Amino acid sequence: MKIKKAVIPVAGKGTRFLPATKQIPKEMIPILDRPMIHYCVEEAVLSGIDEIVFVTSTGKEAIENYFDRNIELENFLEKNGKIELLDKISKIGQMIEVVTVRQKEQLGLGHAVLCAKSVVGQDDFAVILGDDIVINDIPVTKQLVDCHEKHGGSVIGVMQVPKNETYRYGIVKGTTVSDRTLKMDGMVEKPKPENAPTNLATPGRYILKNEIFSALERIERGAGGEYQLTDAINMLCSESQVFAHEFHGKRYDTGSLEGYLRATVDFALARDDLRATMQEILKNGKGHQ
Ligand code: UTP
Image (cartoon, rainbow, N blue to C red; front, top):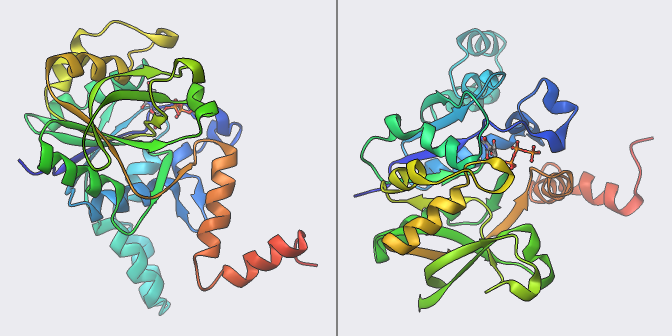
């Protein structure tokens, strides 16, 4: 069964970006001229996904509007001969089919994914966290889809982190089955370096078999009093096959200010129209006089 749906939970409060997130969804904060969420949806499209399920909450309407068409703006741009911009804007509105479901109370990532159950139906699906951006020629979700097609089972995207940073991530344990792929025994949430079974961390990319919903329905509240996706994945590890695949790519934790800043600098350096300006800023360390 091909992976055609991606669930993107965007119902979180984004407290690390307050006060901006008092009024703007974190996912709509731009990196250069595109909101963060644009990069994730583009990744999904390039990975063969044809339907996005946003799990949203109050105040997140801007996200679905962004992926809708804005006919008034398109007419305005056409009338004023701004054809290049018109092309850019209308492409966003036609990028992909978007469905939204509400998470009425923010009870954790596991709960957010469970909210998508009725829309996902019987399919297996991808989960993409909107505040992690991974840049690579072959999009990270596509790499996980390929691993899923090879091995079957659920696939969790992992990346190597320095041993002294394991306390910041979910860390997987398991046995190597092929190049860059482990069959998982389970995962440990934020272990101290001395207790970490590996240095493979889970930054927010998953291919999940539909049976995850049954696990999500059975887990209890975990860390922080929230329903944790990690707990459901651990349940799945003992009931069926879950793999961890070490993806290729550069990952930015754009949910943190530091990661956001790094992404902004790197994305500007990667663009022909902005590279020289960014290089000059980095060299001289000051704004335009
Ligand atoms: P985070 O832990 O990063 O939370 O959630 P957050 O609210 O987005 O940001 P901070 O930490 O307060 O700054 C990880 C992902 O899970 C979603 C978030 O939207 C984010 O994409 N999430 C989290 C939900 O959709 N619902 C929840 O109940 C919790």
